[in-house]
Length: 228
Image (tube, rainbow, N blue to C red; front, side):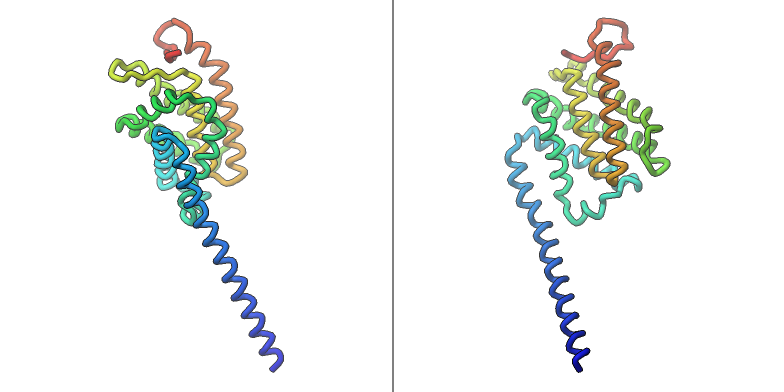
Protein backbone atom coordinates (compact mmCIF):
# COMPACT_ATOMS: atom_id res chain seq x y z
CA UNK A 1 0.00 0.00 0.00
CA UNK A 2 2.81 2.37 0.94
CA UNK A 3 4.65 1.57 -2.33
CA UNK A 4 1.47 2.34 -4.29
CA UNK A 5 1.18 5.71 -2.56
CA UNK A 6 4.83 6.48 -3.31
CA UNK A 7 4.29 5.54 -6.95
CA UNK A 8 1.24 7.81 -7.14
CA UNK A 9 3.22 10.65 -5.59
CA UNK A 10 6.02 10.15 -8.11
CA UNK A 11 3.51 10.19 -10.97
CA UNK A 12 1.98 13.40 -9.62
CA UNK A 13 5.42 14.99 -9.35
CA UNK A 14 6.24 13.96 -12.93
CA UNK A 15 2.94 15.40 -14.14
CA UNK A 16 3.62 18.67 -12.32
CA UNK A 17 7.14 18.85 -13.78
CA UNK A 18 5.81 18.12 -17.27
CA UNK A 19 3.11 20.78 -16.87
CA UNK A 20 5.74 23.27 -15.68
CA UNK A 21 7.95 22.53 -18.71
CA UNK A 22 4.99 22.96 -21.06
CA UNK A 23 4.15 26.32 -19.48
CA UNK A 24 7.76 27.46 -19.86
CA UNK A 25 7.76 26.40 -23.53
CA UNK A 26 4.50 28.26 -24.14
CA UNK A 27 5.94 31.39 -22.51
CA UNK A 28 9.10 31.12 -24.63
CA UNK A 29 7.02 30.74 -27.79
CA UNK A 30 4.78 33.69 -26.90
CA UNK A 31 7.59 36.01 -25.86
CA UNK A 32 9.27 36.36 -29.29
CA UNK A 33 5.92 37.39 -30.84
CA UNK A 34 5.58 40.29 -28.44
CA UNK A 35 9.21 41.27 -28.87
CA UNK A 36 9.06 40.99 -32.66
CA UNK A 37 6.13 43.38 -32.94
CA UNK A 38 7.90 45.94 -30.80
CA UNK A 39 11.23 45.40 -32.52
CA UNK A 40 9.80 45.58 -36.04
CA UNK A 41 8.02 48.85 -35.30
CA UNK A 42 11.37 50.37 -34.36
CA UNK A 43 12.63 49.97 -37.95
CA UNK A 44 11.77 51.96 -41.04
CA UNK A 45 9.49 50.59 -43.75
CA UNK A 46 12.51 50.11 -46.04
CA UNK A 47 14.36 48.13 -43.38
CA UNK A 48 11.29 45.96 -42.75
CA UNK A 49 10.99 45.14 -46.47
CA UNK A 50 14.66 44.10 -46.55
CA UNK A 51 14.06 41.85 -43.52
CA UNK A 52 11.10 40.18 -45.25
CA UNK A 53 13.24 39.59 -48.35
CA UNK A 54 15.97 37.93 -46.26
CA UNK A 55 13.41 35.81 -44.41
CA UNK A 56 12.01 34.54 -47.72
CA UNK A 57 15.51 33.72 -49.01
CA UNK A 58 16.25 31.73 -45.85
CA UNK A 59 12.94 29.81 -45.94
CA UNK A 60 13.45 28.97 -49.61
CA UNK A 61 16.92 27.56 -48.87
CA UNK A 62 15.66 25.52 -45.90
CA UNK A 63 12.76 24.05 -47.86
CA UNK A 64 14.89 23.21 -50.89
CA UNK A 65 18.20 22.00 -49.44
CA UNK A 66 17.93 19.23 -46.82
CA UNK A 67 21.36 19.73 -45.14
CA UNK A 68 20.31 23.30 -44.28
CA UNK A 69 17.55 22.11 -41.95
CA UNK A 70 19.63 21.82 -38.78
CA UNK A 71 17.45 24.40 -37.01
CA UNK A 72 14.17 23.64 -38.79
CA UNK A 73 12.58 22.21 -35.63
CA UNK A 74 13.39 25.34 -33.63
CA UNK A 75 12.09 27.57 -36.43
CA UNK A 76 8.83 25.60 -36.67
CA UNK A 77 8.35 25.91 -32.90
CA UNK A 78 9.21 29.60 -32.95
CA UNK A 79 8.56 31.07 -36.42
CA UNK A 80 9.70 34.53 -35.28
CA UNK A 81 13.15 33.06 -34.57
CA UNK A 82 14.16 34.07 -38.11
CA UNK A 83 13.41 37.73 -37.47
CA UNK A 84 15.08 37.61 -34.04
CA UNK A 85 18.36 36.38 -35.54
CA UNK A 86 18.15 38.70 -38.56
CA UNK A 87 17.66 41.67 -36.21
CA UNK A 88 20.75 40.64 -34.23
CA UNK A 89 22.94 40.48 -37.33
CA UNK A 90 21.50 43.75 -38.65
CA UNK A 91 22.25 45.54 -35.38
CA UNK A 92 25.88 44.44 -35.72
CA UNK A 93 26.06 46.15 -39.12
CA UNK A 94 23.43 48.90 -38.86
CA UNK A 95 25.87 51.79 -38.53
CA UNK A 96 27.53 50.79 -41.81
CA UNK A 97 24.37 51.66 -43.78
CA UNK A 98 22.90 55.06 -44.51
CA UNK A 99 19.12 55.44 -44.95
CA UNK A 100 19.80 55.95 -48.67
CA UNK A 101 21.74 52.66 -48.82
CA UNK A 102 18.80 50.79 -47.29
CA UNK A 103 16.35 52.51 -49.64
CA UNK A 104 18.42 51.53 -52.68
CA UNK A 105 18.90 47.96 -51.45
CA UNK A 106 15.14 47.76 -50.86
CA UNK A 107 14.54 48.99 -54.41
CA UNK A 108 16.71 46.23 -55.87
CA UNK A 109 15.28 43.41 -53.72
CA UNK A 110 11.75 44.56 -54.56
CA UNK A 111 12.24 43.97 -58.29
CA UNK A 112 10.77 40.62 -59.33
CA UNK A 113 13.58 39.77 -61.74
CA UNK A 114 16.17 40.68 -59.12
CA UNK A 115 14.53 38.48 -56.47
CA UNK A 116 14.39 35.58 -58.93
CA UNK A 117 18.06 36.03 -59.84
CA UNK A 118 19.16 36.31 -56.19
CA UNK A 119 17.16 33.23 -55.20
CA UNK A 120 18.78 31.35 -58.09
CA UNK A 121 22.29 32.43 -57.08
CA UNK A 122 21.81 31.42 -53.44
CA UNK A 123 20.14 28.09 -54.29
CA UNK A 124 22.83 27.14 -56.80
CA UNK A 125 25.64 28.15 -54.45
CA UNK A 126 24.36 26.40 -51.34
CA UNK A 127 23.40 23.30 -53.31
CA UNK A 128 27.06 23.01 -54.36
CA UNK A 129 28.37 23.98 -50.92
CA UNK A 130 26.21 21.40 -49.12
CA UNK A 131 26.65 18.66 -51.74
CA UNK A 132 28.80 16.66 -49.32
CA UNK A 133 26.54 17.53 -46.37
CA UNK A 134 28.94 19.92 -44.69
CA UNK A 135 30.79 23.21 -45.01
CA UNK A 136 34.58 23.27 -44.84
CA UNK A 137 37.47 25.25 -46.29
CA UNK A 138 37.13 23.36 -49.58
CA UNK A 139 33.96 25.37 -50.16
CA UNK A 140 35.74 28.71 -50.11
CA UNK A 141 35.74 28.86 -53.93
CA UNK A 142 31.94 28.52 -53.92
CA UNK A 143 31.68 31.37 -51.42
CA UNK A 144 33.85 33.64 -53.54
CA UNK A 145 32.03 32.70 -56.74
CA UNK A 146 28.49 33.41 -55.59
CA UNK A 147 29.54 36.58 -53.78
CA UNK A 148 31.05 37.86 -57.04
CA UNK A 149 27.82 36.95 -58.84
CA UNK A 150 25.75 38.98 -56.38
CA UNK A 151 28.17 41.91 -56.64
CA UNK A 152 27.77 41.82 -60.43
CA UNK A 153 23.99 41.72 -60.10
CA UNK A 154 23.95 44.80 -57.87
CA UNK A 155 26.45 46.48 -60.16
CA UNK A 156 24.19 45.90 -63.15
CA UNK A 157 21.25 47.54 -61.41
CA UNK A 158 23.25 50.51 -60.17
CA UNK A 159 24.67 50.99 -63.68
CA UNK A 160 21.27 50.75 -65.36
CA UNK A 161 19.87 54.00 -66.70
CA UNK A 162 16.38 52.80 -65.78
CA UNK A 163 17.16 52.93 -62.06
CA UNK A 164 18.29 56.01 -60.16
CA UNK A 165 20.31 53.96 -57.69
CA UNK A 166 23.73 54.66 -56.28
CA UNK A 167 25.39 52.10 -54.02
CA UNK A 168 29.04 52.08 -53.03
CA UNK A 169 30.96 48.82 -53.30
CA UNK A 170 31.42 48.86 -49.53
CA UNK A 171 27.66 49.09 -48.99
CA UNK A 172 27.09 46.07 -51.22
CA UNK A 173 29.69 44.09 -49.27
CA UNK A 174 28.10 45.08 -45.96
CA UNK A 175 24.74 43.88 -47.27
CA UNK A 176 26.32 40.64 -48.47
CA UNK A 177 27.80 40.05 -45.04
CA UNK A 178 24.43 40.81 -43.41
CA UNK A 179 22.35 38.46 -45.54
CA UNK A 180 24.87 35.58 -45.74
CA UNK A 181 25.60 35.59 -42.01
CA UNK A 182 21.85 35.55 -41.31
CA UNK A 183 21.51 32.52 -43.60
CA UNK A 184 24.39 30.66 -41.93
CA UNK A 185 23.14 31.29 -38.40
CA UNK A 186 19.65 30.04 -39.21
CA UNK A 187 20.50 26.98 -41.30
CA UNK A 188 23.58 25.33 -39.78
CA UNK A 189 24.41 23.62 -36.50
CA UNK A 190 26.82 25.30 -34.10
CA UNK A 191 30.14 23.91 -35.39
CA UNK A 192 29.19 24.24 -39.07
CA UNK A 193 27.94 27.76 -38.38
CA UNK A 194 31.25 28.71 -36.74
CA UNK A 195 33.31 27.42 -39.68
CA UNK A 196 31.02 29.05 -42.25
CA UNK A 197 31.05 32.46 -40.53
CA UNK A 198 34.85 32.37 -40.40
CA UNK A 199 34.90 31.55 -44.12
CA UNK A 200 32.46 34.39 -44.81
CA UNK A 201 34.62 36.89 -42.93
CA UNK A 202 37.74 35.72 -44.77
CA UNK A 203 35.98 35.96 -48.14
CA UNK A 204 34.79 39.50 -47.42
CA UNK A 205 38.30 40.58 -46.45
CA UNK A 206 39.77 38.96 -49.56
CA UNK A 207 37.30 40.80 -51.79
CA UNK A 208 38.07 44.06 -50.00
CA UNK A 209 41.79 43.58 -50.61
CA UNK A 210 41.81 42.11 -54.11
CA UNK A 211 38.62 43.30 -55.83
CA UNK A 212 37.59 46.69 -54.47
CA UNK A 213 40.81 48.50 -55.43
CA UNK A 214 40.28 47.25 -59.00
CA UNK A 215 36.61 48.19 -58.84
CA UNK A 216 37.51 51.82 -58.36
CA UNK A 217 39.85 52.06 -61.32
CA UNK A 218 38.95 53.28 -64.80
CA UNK A 219 40.07 50.27 -66.75
CA UNK A 220 38.56 47.78 -69.19
CA UNK A 221 35.22 46.02 -68.93
CA UNK A 222 36.69 43.28 -66.77
CA UNK A 223 36.63 45.67 -63.82
CA UNK A 224 33.77 45.99 -61.42
CA UNK A 225 32.27 49.42 -61.87
CA UNK A 226 30.54 50.47 -58.70
CA UNK A 227 29.34 53.99 -58.07
CA UNK A 228 31.41 55.59 -55.40
